[in-house]
Image 1: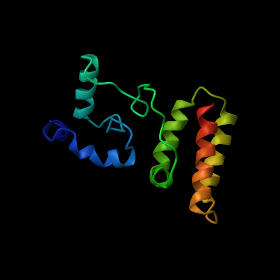
Image 2: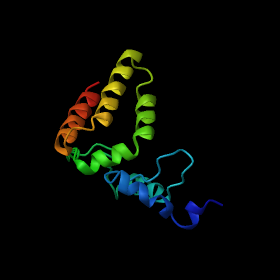
Image 3: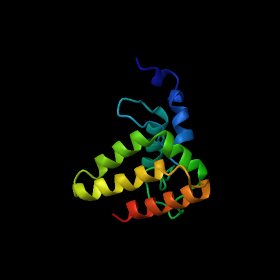
Image 4: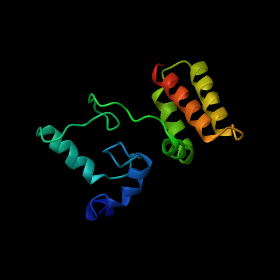
Length: 131
């Protein structure tokens, strides 16, 4: 029996701090998220609505990139880039390489201020979302 079932998915709570706007706490296919099962069940019954960041589409705006988001992205950059690569697998390889290089440059821009890094991150996110 998975510990996730016994403790109700609480072992995934730290993922909430990494992805605070997501209702889904599991990030890997082998992680069991009992809370997500409940939320999806409530959604099917009309008792819950999933919004942006959780896989749904509410009218509320996506949170703006800030220093907290920048820190979370830096801490999880390998997983995020792997997920990004999987999502863009069908896209042109040149585009993927260019976006990856831009993000790599953002991570290695050590002389920039925090405000400049956040601005660069916002520009990269806008570019990535329009592709």
